[in-house]
Image 1 (spheres, rainbow, N blue to C red):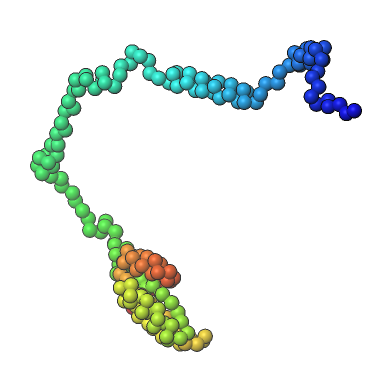
Image 2: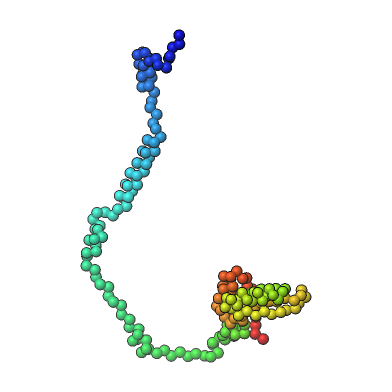
Amino acid sequence: MAKDFAKKRPSAKARKQAATSKQAQPKAVKPWRWYGSGVLTGVLLSFLLYLGTLPPSGAGTPIETAQEPQEQAPTPRFDFYTLLPERTMDVEVDPNDIPPQRASLRAASEYYLLQAGSFKQREDADRRRAELLLLGLDPQVEQSDGDNGRWFRVYLGPFESKSKMAKARSMTASQEIDTLLLKRSKP
């Protein structure tokens, strides 16, 4: 005959031995308890650090300092409006001591060009000229013959100042048209 050992209840002696063996084993601390204790310790230390940064209680609150009467700052006086016209200064200037204005002479004799392309075919140069005309610029196409054949170059300018040239160059750069800066002297 078959016996069902799964339904068999342990004897009282076996139960007593199992209970004593459980008491002898130390209980394992779950990892969540370690995590929780670390978080609580960190919060407590942060709170203590915050309390250490607060001003002392005798320093006063912002409300109390706002109620104190404010001294008005004196209004500034500007006397130079009346003092300067009354003063004069005599200065002797020797015309030979003044250095010549080389920068203005150089600027008057130089100008800037932007080369917006160099093409073998006239149609390509005209296409680039049309793109620049749509930007509101005034391009010219010049033909040049050299050792390497005939080239059609598209120029912008002449520009008398660097600021006007830079404005035109930024407009061409926004349309992804590369330009070459050329500096030339007036004949």
